[in-house]
Image (cartoon, rainbow, N blue to C red; front, side):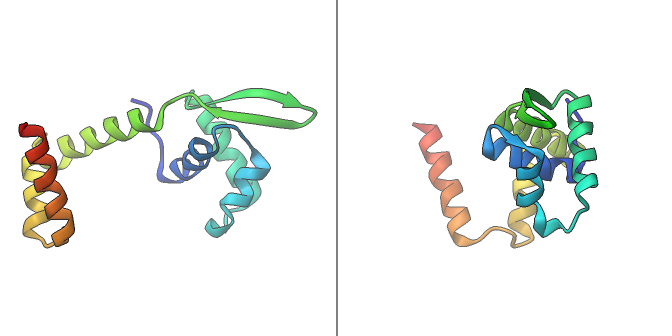
Length: 121
């Protein structure tokens, strides 16, 4: 799995959300991060080097970036790694941990029960 830092992930979220985007659009969307424009360009270049992002076209000095990895696939792999690292691979233990520590609302719990009942059918 490609290792993406938390900062790189913020850039990836913008690219995933836009499907195609330029560095200026990414910079504008990440204004809330208070990062220097060059920092964001560096993050984009790191993602290109990792083959997480590609260039779909170039017009003058403007590049259009596209995701080369799918968001759902990345989430699934990262989730599995998280469960493996912190819960020895047991989703059961992870869910119990969240339940035991009151991290799930009544609505969350009901959604889980509904999903389990749906899977049983």
